[in-house]
Image (cartoon, rainbow, N blue to C red; front, side, top):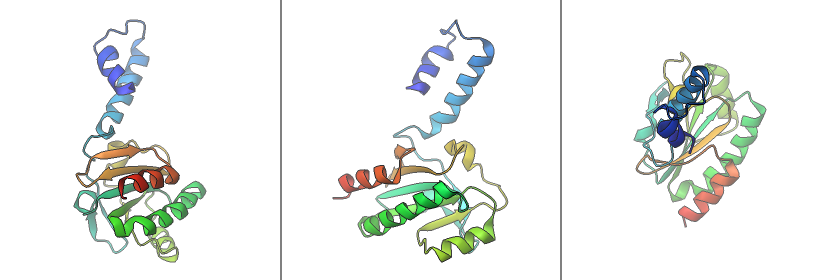
Length: 173
């Protein structure tokens, strides 16, 4: 709704009551959100896994893929990851995958953490911060969880693990 209103009223200068500073903020925010609206194609992410091998988000073959932006050293992220691993093990045989993106350039500690916790889904990290995932997916906080379908279209975004479980239970009957 925000993107629609920004495009229809603010970007066309119909919102005459807004000053140029506020207008700039609204337009910038709308442009950041637009690429990841529901039913839009998910932007590509290509990052190295824990072995240093590049893994493409769009190359994963699954009915549904959760994109999990997190930091291994964040308490809220750790809680979400523990919930998510249970969901992953429940639905993975039915065509569900997780593409977990470490948001900080802490390759070795992250690698140790994911192996200790047996997070056997697709794990990627950008230790050199060369990708632009934060801008493509509007990642400004962690954890951030999204769901894409087999056509790589965004089905849900900014959801909790509990909401993900509910969505998958209905879609993967």
